Amino acid sequence: MSARKWLLIAALLTPGLGLILVLIGTVVYIAVAQSFGFYTITGESGFTTQFWSDMIGRKLFSRSINYSIYVGVLSAIFSVALAYPLALWLRKPFAGSMAIGAVLKAPLLIPGLVAAFLFINIISYNGIVNQLIQWLGFSDAPIRMQNDSNAIGVLILQTWKNLPFALLLLTGAVRGISDEVLDAARDLGAGTWARFSKVIAPLTVSGMQASLVIIFIGAVSDFSFQVIAGPTNLQSMSQLMVTFKDRGDWNSAAVVGVSLMMIALIGSALMAIGARLMLRRRLT
Amino acid sequence: MTMSKLNKVLMISLLVICTLWLVVPFTMAVLWSLVDPSQPWTADKLLPPAMSFYRWIDMWQNSSLKSALFTSYALAPSAAVLCLLLAAPTAFALGRFKFPGREVAKTLCLLPLVVPPFITSIFFSSVLFQLGFTGWRFGAILFAHAVLFLPYAIRILTVSFEQVRQEHIDAARDLGASHWARFRVAYLPALKPGIFAALLIVFIQSIEEFAIAFIVGSPSIVTIPTLLFSALGQDFVRPNAAVLSLILVVPNVILMLVLEWLLKSANPTLSSGKG
Image: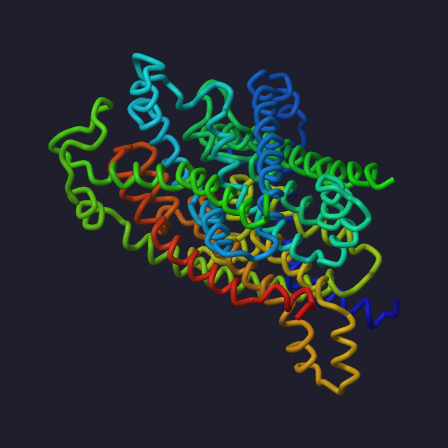
C-alpha cells in the first residue's frame, strides 16, 4: 500500500475512530489509574494495589461478577435465538410482514425505564398476572414475583428489549442473501436446518456476532433493570459501582468498573469467536 | 401445508404473542394512569373503581415534564446527525478498503460499548469539564452521546459500505459518471437502509440514555429518563409513573411508524443489486 493511501485511510478514520480513541482512552485511563490509587478525590494519591486486593477478597464482589455474567450471557443467547427465525420469516415481504416487523421492533423504541415500569406493573402484587392466577384458582393469595431471586424478571426484560435490536441487524444480513444461493442449496438437497446452518448462518455471521456482542455488553453492565426488577439480595456490577461511588469510595468504584470493562471485553470476544468457530466446524 | 397457510398460522400465533408482548402491558399502564385518587384500585377488582384524567393534568402542570421533553427531543436528533457525520468516513474506510489492521480498527470502534455507562459518564464528565465544557451542559451531553453511540453507526454503515457492489461502481465509472454521480447510483441505494438504521438507533439510544444525562446534566438539565428514574425511585406513585411512562412512550411510537415508513421506502432489492 502506498503512503498516500495510508494517509487517506488515517484521515478517514480520524473523526470516528480517532475521536473514540482519544476520549474513551482518557476515560479508561483515569478509571484504571484510580483503581490503582491515583487521582484520589480525598486523601493521598499514589500507586497501590490495596484497592484491588481488598475488593477481590470480598464475597459481595464475586457474587456480583457471577450475577452480571449470568444475566449478560443468557440475555444475548435468548435474544439472538429468538430473532433468527423471525428474521428469516420476514426475509421476503408478504401481506402484513411490514406490520409485523413494526410490532416486533416496537420495544426498541420503548425506553428501558418505561419497559421496567410496564413489566413490574404487570407482575406486581396486585397486577394482572396475579389476578389471573387467582381467578383461575391456581392460588388463593397473590404471589410475590417482583425482584425474584433468579432474576427471571431481568432476563425477560432484557430479551424483550434486545430481541428487536438483534432482529434489526439480522434482518439486514438475511436480506443480503440472494435467492440463487438458497435455491441452489435447496436443489442440492439441503433441508431447512442444513440451509440455515450451512448457508444462512455463515453468511450472516457478522450480524450474529454484532448482535451477541452488543446485547451481552449491554446486559452485563445493566443498572436500571436490576435496580427496578432484579433480586434485592444481589447487586449487578454497575449497581455495585454506583454504590461505592455514592459512598465517595471512588477507588473501589474504579476497581469494579475496570473489572466490568474486562469482563465485557473478554466475554464479547469469546462470544464472537465462539460463533465463528461453531460455524467453521459445521462447514468442514 | 402451503406457504400462505403457514404464514396465516404464524401470523395468528404472532398476534397472540404481540398481545401479551405489547397490548397487555400498555393497557395496564393506561388503566393505572386513569385511577382517580378518590378510590384505590385493589387486586379484587378487574377495572379501576373510579377513573379520571386527574393524574394526567396534575403531571402536565406540576412536574418538569415539559422541559424534559424539549431537552430530550432536541438532544436526540442532533446527536443522531452528528454521530452519522462522524461515523461515515470511518465506516467508508472499514467497508471499502482492505488494509492491515482493519479488524483491529473495527474492534477498537467498539470501545465505547465496553466501558460501562456509569463509569463512562463519571469519567467522561471529568474529561469534558477539564476541556472547558462546563458552561454548556447540553453541548457536553450532545458531544458525549455522539461519541458514545459511534459504534452503532460505524458498525451499521460499515456493513452497508461492504454491500455496495464493486461492479456497480466500476460500471458507473466506465460509463463516465462523475464522483457524485457514482456515489448517487452505486453507493446511495445500498447505503440508504444503513443510514436510516444508524440514525434510528442513535436517536433511540440518545432518547433512552440515562447515565450521561444524569451525571453530566444534573442538576440543571432534566431529560425524559432522568425524570422517569426519579419518578420510579424516591417518590414512587404508581399512577404517576404510569402517566409519565405513557407520555414518554407515545411520541416514540409515532416516530417508529414514521421511521418504519422511511425504512420501507428504502427498497431492499436496490441494496442487493437485484432490481
